[in-house]
Image (cartoon, rainbow, N blue to C red; front, side, top):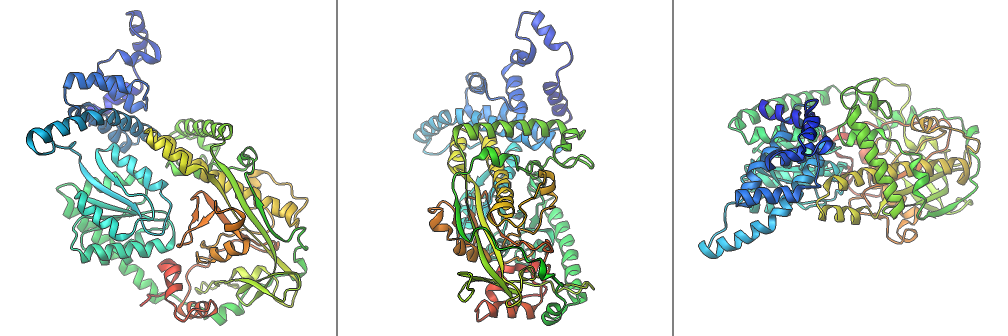
Length: 625
């Protein structure tokens, strides 16, 4: 390993004067001096530095010398990826660089594939059997579970594992349990990895674990994704499957975990994880006993005092409005770049954590700036070639609060209820003076006429199609970058739409003059919470928003809501907009059984099962039966 690291350092930072010497000797000098090396050195350099310009000719030279394409893969190419894996593990290479290396590797293998297929056919004819496949360190199957469409994190994990010589079987998104397990058996995989973003995905992961146990499967199960946690994995999943369950925090940890469960120390590693998760589980159950609750009635009686003389003015516009193909050049001005760097696991240390200070960070600053320049370049290309389109729907409607819910009316007469947004109230007794619910920010019925706005938007129309083109040419780094950029555009478009609601469409803050920094620090009047997130964690509320805004018709089907209430394209945002100056962001936290029963009844449900499923164990403050 040390020899590899030393070699890699020389490749990345050649000794001073080496280039000059090469030039003096009449060979290539300067930045292309590496072309003077033998094909092994050139392949390693290309992989480490993400250069695909000469990859075909260098791979062909290696094939001509080594005779068998499989030997090229298992020899110089795998050696190069081994160096990259070591550099990444040692913190000397960053994720954006690793993704570029994976692109070069993919193109090298793509060049060799036709030769291997030819050999395979010849061998099959001669011996009646297939030749050996490349000798991978192991096989990992990955899938985003049924009902969930987010996969950028999973894609990055696949790249990292591929760079460490693991064969990755990526099944994509919204994959049903049966298909995952059948494919796992077909491929004889060593590890299964499940990914998910939304709360119901947690229950689906539990179901997959139960089915693995029922089928007597033995391979370890990795759990990852934004909504997952070590605690949920320990409490809800580990107990369902005996083959080993490990929560993976991010892509950089995935290789360590897979290597551990593939090593001779596998059982010791899994036993240690099991002991750790048992402690977490015991601690969780002890906190359930210690929790204090307000009854729902007590929490409702402690709602905040809101000044209803400050009810926002009547909107300048009432109804729904389609915003089609909004200029991306204007949206770009509202991009918050900090989460973009977090996707690539580039995290500066305080005070250089956020954009643009991250460029000054000693460890990640240089790579962050390089990645930022690539993103800006891609944005220019996106605008010039019209690769991505941004569209959205905005609605503003008369509304009033009725208890913990919000009635939305068909007209200013307020005699016909068009729809109802249901609210959940903070209930965990934290000795606070007030217990919040979204409905607190809308004037109660009979007190004053009030209004509510809502919107849904995307910055990702065209993203899926272009990503497929990138993947077809092996440009996985560009595919991931495009997804990350589309996500930023969607969030920026939401920022812009909210501003237009405040200043013109509703016009309750017509004189607002805020910088982007002010907007990102939430210095505007009112709030825009998203259905399914902390202030109302039930994703089913998105369907109410969807129907209110008539999105299917107005967007001509370009914006879609899946059966599990995920928005498509995945680079999309939705929100309710509350205009009252005392409205603030908050988290409902956990709720108790009495509130779940009342909430389900108000929704017209005969049992609590649906509500319990959609709120999930992170919101439920009790063990569901």
